[in-house]
Amino acid sequence: MDRRLVEIFPPLGLRITCGPLELRGITDVEVLALLEVVREGVHDADTMPFAYPWTDAPAGELPLDYLKWWWRQMATWSREAWEINLCALWDGEVVGVQGVSTQDFPTLRYGETGSWVGRKFHGRGIGTAMRQAMCAFLFDELGFEFITSAAFADNAASLRVSEKLGYRENGLVWQAPRGGRVVSQRLLLAPEDFVRGPAITVEGAEAVRRLIAADEPEPGP
Ligand SMILES: CC(C)(COP(=O)(O)OP(=O)(O)OC[C@H]1O[C@@H](n2cnc3c(N)ncnc32)[C@H](O)[C@@H]1OP(=O)(O)O)[C@@H](O)C(=O)NCCC(=O)NCCS
Image (cartoon, rainbow, N blue to C red; front, top):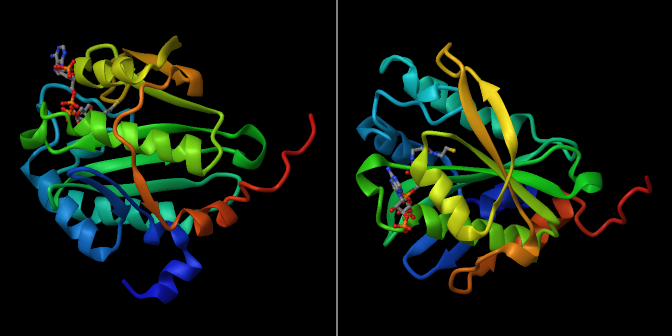
């Protein structure tokens, strides 16, 4: 990774580690490895866990769609609406993505986590470890005051991860990722409810704090 790029866009230099788990900025190396994991499958074809059904794209279109997502979340970065998406590795192998997205963060100080793990890696505790590491990073290093999430009512694995971490139910909304109406459970995690995992180590947080203006006073009401 060329350090000049990290100086300009610090999320690329983030590295969060916790035992066998590493979360790191997504460069061209990681995005191509992630595409291989996507190609092997993220979820059963008869379910759609994502509000935007990106995994339904025809095989010939998905790679370019995926690169466009990767470019877009960097190209549209602003203090008013930013995302940090990190590549997850388990014992050095690329397994999925852990992200967070925010709106008006300098004032609102919360964001929404989202993640996926390649299907062949499900059920090994990786999704739990990823989300625990991300939430610890957001609360401890970036000054988040709440973290939200959401999962469709049939997504038992995601709901279970949220439950294990201490998220509370926070209402229902209806969405139609594949055209038909499905119920989405909204979830909210407060710092005092957070069930932490093992301690994390973080590299690159200071530059990200500056980028997101985490240390500037919140505007008044
Ligand atoms: C959701 C996801 C990230 C979880 O990752 P994971 O590595 O499989 O999660 P973990 O192994 O850490 O934990 C899964 C938990 O769900 C439980 N679980 C899994 N399937 C379940 C089912 N059908 N019914 C009940 N519990 C279930 C597991 O037993 C485990 O709980 P436990 O530790 O108490 O036993 C992963 O399943 C995934 O990527 N799914 C497809 C994409 C997706 O759904 N993303 C989230 C969109 S909201």
